[in-house]
Length: 250
Image 1 (cartoon, one colour):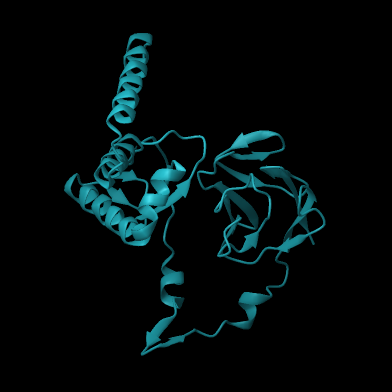
Image 2 (cartoon, rainbow, N blue to C red; image 1 turned 135 degrees about the vertical axis):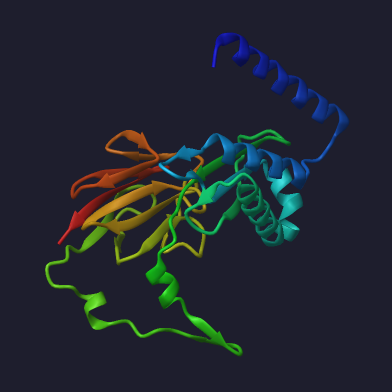
């Protein structure tokens, strides 16, 4: 992008912002949908016979906009995900898993502004096969094989909080994907207010630990360097907000 184009986009955003504030126009879901489609197209990855696009989208909104949409947050998220799936099919684009849209609050954004973080998250056939099925109102869980819990020779990872409000706590990592953040539904819950509700994801892959930032507000640092996706080695330190965690293995 050259200087002229950057300058043009700057003034366009400025005028749009002034117009929005002057007219007191609320952010509409259709505007979010358009920005999601634009992000999907911009994040294309061309393969041999397919063009891949992200299937996970985190939409950051101003607190006032989020509050107004919170009444139907989940219905809107499902609708937006369906919209992206339809758009991808129309343009012959491939998603590696079912699309998912999540809404998040970001205090620094002005009313009407939207920040979108997109990533690919591949669905696992074995997870689908093990997915619990419902009979009436009862959720039936598949039994976990004993060797899945304790495989000989398998390294055991844990995250030790060495700085921050939760210093002294330890999180034991298990096979599969686990999310760290402030939201009560996260696998590892922190009380640090500078940590996003769903800050980052940890997943064991090839006997190593894969870290993926989930579009957090303040980012994720590994050994002082900001990353979106990185493998962690024993002794590495990751920082989320004011919290520092060290990867340990036993």
